[in-house]
Image (cartoon, rainbow, N blue to C red; front, side, top):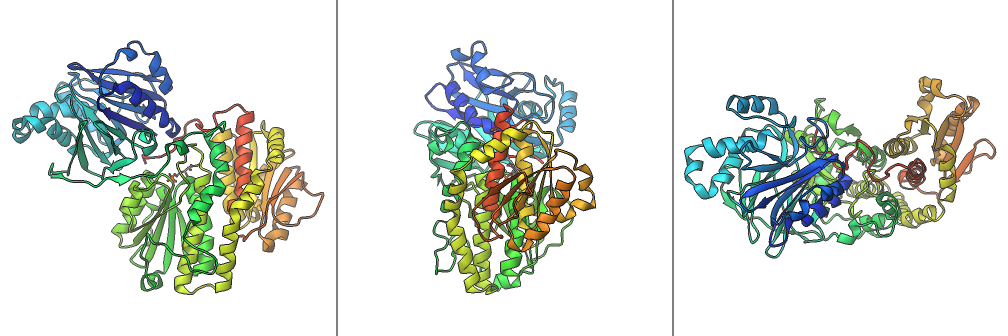
Length: 617
Ligand code: F6R
């Protein structure tokens, strides 16, 4: 999704802005642009296509301005084109704006502005913003007009008051050449503090090489950023102070570290990500502890239902969470897709605990679903990979996976870390509630501790998966089958394949196949079966036998002893508790998708139409 960068300091802004945009490429975009203040005017350079294309624009190297804003656009209103790229200016070229999010009432605002003599050069929702700023700058309330120093800020505030929807906005003007005004609502924005320079970004990695000290802007909060100072204002423009947060991420961790692609690097980082996520949360022979949350036995005993709510891969982690919570804590658990949950009037009250999983912590639907649960009196717990992300600031409790920055659009290490963290949370609850035996929990702890080395074993032997990928990469359709948590992980395997190889695939609960989907099985179709639960081996094999009879080519991912000769390929992975086996069985499926995508010559890290962080509904 769209990305924002801003710079104000003593250096030429252009290289800092373009470098920042390059760091945000992973979010997905179709056009890029920058605006700097040059003497007494604004210079805008933008076009559709890659960030690096900006260097080919005539005159870009002549920009000397030390104040600038920049943007990567992921088209929502209007196709990718130069006109629709950000930054956008008002008709008098006095204000330039970049914007992430969606202005829902932009048609109304366009009509209002048109009636007041404004013209529009693009089809975007964003273009109303600089024109509204201009409108209020010239026609604003007397209080704004009189206070010349804060008139720009006042005009931005008046403009923002008219907006419905979500936004992170940067605005500059030669009228106030030494400041950038920023504001956000439901779309992330951070300010990085430097020495005699300050940085702005929608995502921390964009400016991590410059600073580790960040101000995390809140919803409806304004900041006036100058090179030596950042001033914060609430929605009534009352000034307040804000604490700095130190973000420990290593800038190198956001690089490729010698790997061909971020996805491959992140697949290989999974043993470390799990070790870090386990961290000091438990040791063998000791109870689990979460220093970051304060959940009492009294509260947990009052919980009669848990919801996991998330999107995409994070939702798949929630599905495994259901099995963990129900097995260990005996609390009925539901799993919802956030975009469904928020509109289906779910039954929630103060006895419901809603757990939201989000790698980025910025997914619009997940945040909205969290706000909904809070408004019904439920307690909310956020699981995120990004410290200080929006979701963690909204939730009653927040806990973090420690997977490090995930850059590839297709999620890998975030998923396995999320499942690991949910397992620890379930053990923690079960220990508080006394709902599982000590020996059962102790065994699961030891299985979790063993996971990183078992992942390493799988990663040390990827040739078989690569060879299989070579045999099937030209196929058009594939199926993934499993039962229980094997079905949960089948959904994730299928999603990975779709996203990065563009091969159509479906995942089914193996027992459901004969209720319809089996009609699609014909000679040569590839079916991937996952069998890791000893109690379900025979039943799973029978289901796969049914597709073999109809001509399917089969790959089985298993940690069980299964009969020889039935299947075309069998990939054996290390054994573990079925409740956490997705952490191991997903690895070959991640690698399979990766190699298929490579054999097809596709861009693994930036698949078409996708964005890393989905900050709009
Ligand atoms: C798939 C993928 C997406 C995300 C989903 C939620 O590989 O990455 O399905 O899982 O967009 O994102 P977060 O976890 O950031 O809320």
